[in-house]
Every structure is written in structure tokens, then in C-alpha cells.
Image (cartoon, rainbow, N blue to C red):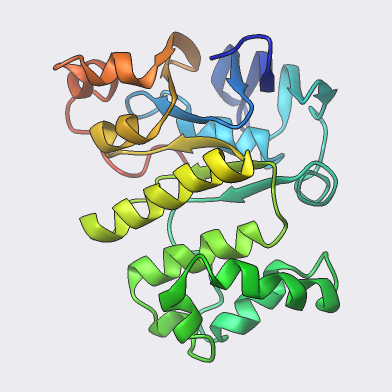
Length: 249
């Protein structure tokens, strides 16, 4: 990572759920226009990092900066509309009975209908299969199509930063590779900074530029992803045994 070109800077952050703190004076930087992978066993704080960055969890101590600007107290709405941060959480987060088009329209609600409709075609060009199902109910799409729709909805706002949590859950290997290729394209061609949590460690390391390992809410390692990929014990070292897809509340 180029330390002189950070996009995200987390400094001594403490955050969690209620009185239970998961991030324990966490500090790290993520470089602009690169894909950074968060690794660690259950409870290490990976999903909590994304939720805290997106303003869903309160920072109890420390600071978060985006492109040098303090966003520690920013709300999710402000992060979306003013700072260009989008979040694709775990699981399915669509309005199942609404059509693909209606889900996209809701994703761009802060833009206004005119701008949303102008941007929808550019998003659909990234997802040909979703484009074919524009009038179908979101619930009728396959798991892979639904995940692509969720990502497409986030991209409507043309984010500078994309936070994405476990994108491969429930998807076939072929669809996972399609999603990963899209993330690589966003970083390489659009300059989007991607911060990702992913259970498929080896595939994710092949995709990522940088990797950060967490343990008990602290950073314990930050290296180029290619270096970690060469370690034959990567799953044991950074996931532990019995890793499950769902990490934190």
C-alpha cells in the first residue's frame, strides 16, 4: 500500500454493540483505488469495521478519515450523498416483491428520479442478466442475480468507496468470479476504493491488492495480498477452524 496515498484512515477506533466493544483501538489505512481484504476469525471485528465505517455503529473513541476529511460522526445518508461511500451488507437486502427497476429506483432515491433514470442504463450494462429481468420481481432472481442487483443499486451513486461484506455467500463459483471481476474493474478503471470481507480467502487474496488481518478488534498484520497468498497455512492462520459465514450480530 502507498502510505502517502490513503483513502481510508482509521485511528485508535473503539466501537461495538451496546456495551460490548469489538473494535479495540483499531488503526489501519486503505489505499485509494485498491482492493483491501479484511481477514480474521469469527469475532475479530471484520463486519464491525464495515458497519462502523458506514455510520451504522457509533465510534466510542478514535477517528475515521476519508481522503483526509473527518467522517467519524457522519450518518449513513451523509456518507452516501456527500462522501461517496456505499455499503453492500451480508445476505439479501432487496425489496423482493418490487421489480428490478423499482429496486434500482429506490437505490437512487437521494438522486431524484431524473438522475436515477439517467444512471440506471450505465449500471445495467455491467449486469446483462439483470438487465434482461428488469420487469421481474427481485425475489424471482437467482441468488447471483440478486447479489448483482444489490451491487448495481450501490453503484448508482457512483461511489468513491465500496464496502462489501461476504459477497460470495450463497453464490456458485462461476457467479463469484463474475462479481470479483466486477470489483477488480471498478478499482482499476473507475478508481473505486474497495474494502471487503470475504470467507473465500484464497480467491479473495487473488483479487485483492492488500490484506489486513484482525484479531480481537486490532490489526495484527498488513501486507500485500500476493504475499499472504503464498502462505500454505493462510486459512488456519487467519480464519481459524470452523469458520462460519456469519460473524457478528
